[in-house]
Length: 100
Image (cartoon, rainbow, N blue to C red; front, side, top):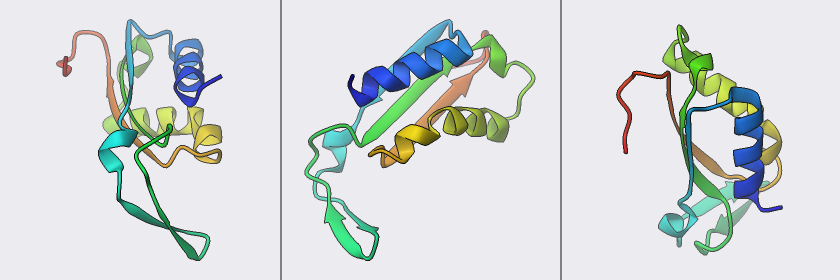
């Protein structure tokens, strides 16, 4: 199962979103470097290392921005340990303004 599919499945199961977009942005980071475990890694833009998540869920109602981000980060902690390098999170409750 791909990283994108795992992210979609975990967020769908935990948040029951009314809208979910998981966008692979890895290609936008080609040539960027990262210091990891005392060596420099240069991203080639291939694979599944950088994602943007746009999620609208009733579970976010009444939660502040930090709590929403923490919720998504906690759900995807296993992915961060297994190759996910960067995650841009755009969480919203139903009825709030979102990007299209």
